Image 1 (cartoon, rainbow, N blue to C red):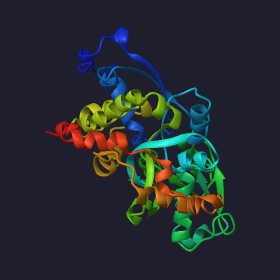
Image 2: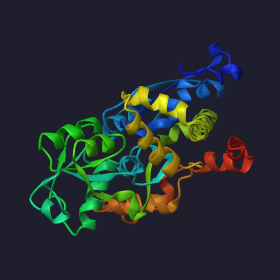
Image 3: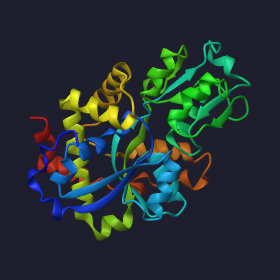
Length: 319
């Protein structure tokens, strides 16, 4: 552990054992890492095992199977699973827009040069897939007709795929963006700059757990929200935690990841909104017709975050 200054409130023998998974090697996944490493989970009575999965697809399968109780994952993957009949509910959103970039090889100087080429994503059905389709449509290009969409696996594989010309552009998150640009690849589109509300990353669990053990969900959400505040207030600590989980000591990559993902876009109040979930459903409707008329509020429970707001818990974290 990096620091255990928060553990005074809980006897380690009385902690509830919980398993959670994060679904990408990206700085947007940072809150549970920091909550684990600093003892914030323990402060709230939890002993949380933090598990990595390659993409959201594997993470969602683990949640549905009951192998983990919580996921750090995109709202799109969560809503897609729920539309398919899974008992899945979003309980918080940490970033409410797509913080991604379309990065291209040096010879792809303009968007029209992507015609007949391939854009890399992690897996179909993930938020990275959503970003690719939005970016191509923004440029007036038809996904999978004018531009191929290629699965490369985890985010850590994206830069390699660019370097080897397996793909000519890709949807990247930090710190992969920093790494790719250092190697000579360049920005075609900052998707976040489009300002599209979207439940990009957050906390998801099963509806059954919310009904049967709301106190567990409440404590988990308290810890994550406290971890966000701690990260925003202590950059050096956040950088150390990020470096450990992202497996990099590159100070520039970590600093840029922190400045964009944590300081600029991570929400102090991780509230899921109907507007952000509607964008998720609008995107899914092209592949899942029943998403078109689905009510956004069916896919999230904002009661835990609203309780933190009304109690003054979140305000107190920033005093």
